[in-house]
Every structure is written in structure tokens, then in C-alpha cells.
Amino acid sequence: MDRKHLKGLNDNEVLSSRSQHGDNLLTPPVRESLWKLFLEKFEDPIIRILLIAAFLSLIISFVHNEYAETIGIFSAIILATGVAFWFEMDANKKFDILNKVNDDTLIKVIRNGNIIQVSKKDIVVGDIVVLETGEEVPADGELIEAVSLQMDESCLTGELVITKTTHQSEFDEDSTYPSNWIMRGTKVIDGHATMEVRKVGDATEYGQVAQKSTEMTHESTPLSQQLDGLAKFIGVVGFFLAAMTFSTLLLKIFSLAKPRYLCYNLDRWES
Image (cartoon, rainbow, N blue to C red):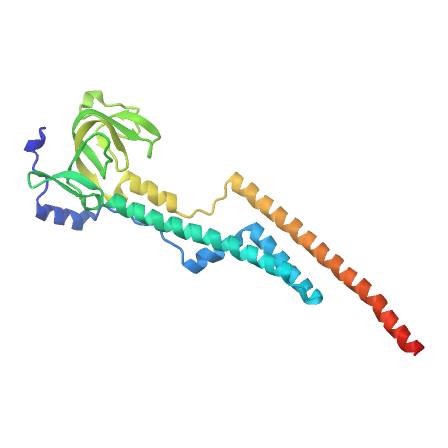
């Protein structure tokens, strides 16, 4: 079908479709509070070991009245957790900015019989989208026209080059998705096409994958189990060594204090 014969949606149909199917936006993942995000940094086994060492050092510092080492350990803990917290905050901000820029990308659509450009987030179900080489598909939809069309579906299926067509006789039965169906996030690497949007936002295949990737699961993988075991082993060994060091220092203190006490009593007896 020639593009000039496609009229697309009118303004009222756009509003109706948006109210029925929603905007072409992905629901952002739930963000934890800043305090919780900061406190999570202290769950690192190395930080916990440093905290134990810091408190033991603080006790010893009270005895010797020397706080330089204790201050150094606490400073290292604050620096490590602070830097990690700042980097994560900065990464989240940049991620939000990139998402906003991506949602504002202009897409060519046919509305009221004319080809116009609208923001990616304003695409609605029923829109006729015009795609050229190098452009990213804004939503899931069915092909109306496809000329030498090849897509990069690596973000969903891992396939770098896959041919799409509207001719049923040329459909690839072994393909992950129908040969006349293209999805949000995939890119046109050759040819051009016209598609009718069928799914937007979270309803798209890309949106479903994004939601699944942000779901919290309590199932531990073999690698995470090994890492947890290693962290616990390091924690136990670190705590044992710290306790041994603390005990040794206490014995040393008492051993030095006892002769002084005896000498003091002896001096008093002789006098």
C-alpha cells in the first residue's frame, strides 16, 4: 500500500487511543530512599570487617590515649561508602536523563493524512509509523509495507540481522517473532518500512523484558552462593584475627602494668 493513501489517525482518535491504551512510556523502576541506599553500602563484608577493626581500635585507643589509627580506619570507611553512594546516585541521574532524551526522540507518523513528527512518548496504538534505515522502532506493531527490510533484534533475541517482510510466502517459521512484526527497541539496519502500532509502553515486548529485569528475586545463583560463602569466611577469619589481636594487646597491657604495681608497693613497704 502506498503511503500517500494512508490517512492514519485524526486528533480525536489519538486522544481516544491514548485514554484506552495509555502513553508510550515505560514504568520506571522503583527507587529506594537515599538513606536506605546509603546504608546498603555497609552490607559489604569488607566494610563490616573494617567496622569491627575500627571499634576494637577505638577501645584500645582509650587505653593508650592514641586515636590516630582509629580516626584513619573510620575515615577510610566513610570515604569508601561515600564514594560508592555518590557514584550510584550519579549513575541513576544520568540514566534518568538518557531515558528522557530517548522518550523525546522525534518519530515520523501519518496523522490526518499527513506525515508529521511526534515525540516517541506520544505514539499511540493505531498510529502509522514511517521508518527509515538507522531508525529505532518506537513501539510494537505490524508491518504494512516493507522494502528490503532488515532489522537488528539483538536487544531482544540476540539476532543482529533478521529479514522482515509482509509477504506471507516469505515468512520464516523458525523466527522468534513473526516476520511481519517489529518491536520497540529494535533498529532498521537496511531498507524502509511502514508499520501500524499495536502495543505501546509496558505492553510492548521490550517493556515486558524491562519489567522482568527489575523484579527482585530471592533465588541465589551458584556464583552468588559461593561469593556469600567466601564473604562469610573472610568475615569470620577477620573477626577471629581482630579478637586475637585485641586479646594480645590486653595481655601485653596487663603484663606491663603488673611489674609497675609491684614496684610501687615495694617502694611503699621499704619507706
